[in-house]
Length: 207
Image 1 (cartoon, rainbow, N blue to C red):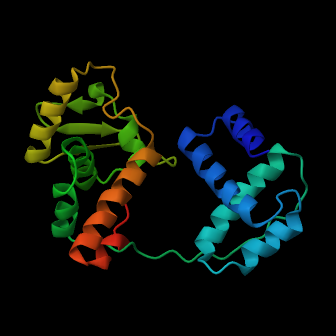
Image 2: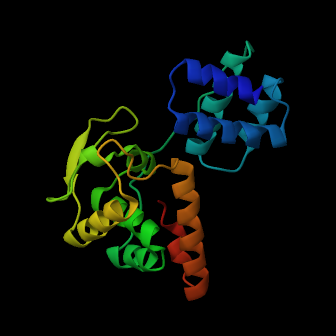
């Protein structure tokens, strides 16, 4: 039935990255409770020790499951308290980039310069980039307005070398992977560096 939820979301034109995230949360719920019993699911989410923001993501995922499988339930509401994200120093970002492979260093350098979400980077095509000036036109996720930003000169050198090496044309995606692959790769590099340096603060730097 998790699959039926993914198919339901596909028909409703949800982004692949959103479908993947919902499926991941539903699999988590499946390991802890019976999805066809809404009151059990509701109780599990309510009693879970985590932020209200995470509880809200579980509720939204389960609500889509219920819609896809014609299950009636009363959706709970959790007050969400937003706070400013913790901004890491550029020095620590550069430490992580320096420990990455050549290709992944480009990925992280562009994210550092542009402030993109992982999924936004995977949407980029060569035609979205001015390879002379380093200007990048970004299609924004989560219904935000698109924006145009510029990468640093060092990143632009890396970018041009990558495009030549891969022999990419204007309609090619710059990084033909999904956003979850970028996230998993980042966590591996970051956590390994944190362990090697015994600096657990690095593990708090989210992609």
